[in-house]
Image (tube, one colour):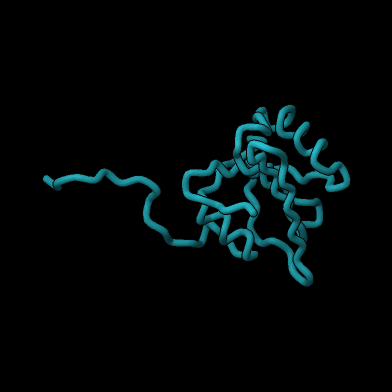
Length: 119
């Protein structure tokens, strides 16, 4: 079982992926298009062209996990855009995305705050 923790790196592929390629094809895409190591322990999130399904690729030290979620009636409303091939998400934003929500609309405290006396 994969547990998403605040310390995990969550990387979202901006361009749609061909879901027929499986683990090896997505790992190849991590290396080539995203310039990232699929063995790094990060979560790599991909979306299909229609926007109805996402896949998450993760390496846990022993092997790869490939998780697939397909919405039955809707599309995922949120997906990052831009010139970069990959964008980062915070763990709580990924939880919202997996619930078919819009992480940009969530209000959460900043991920890091200085602890100590104010002054």
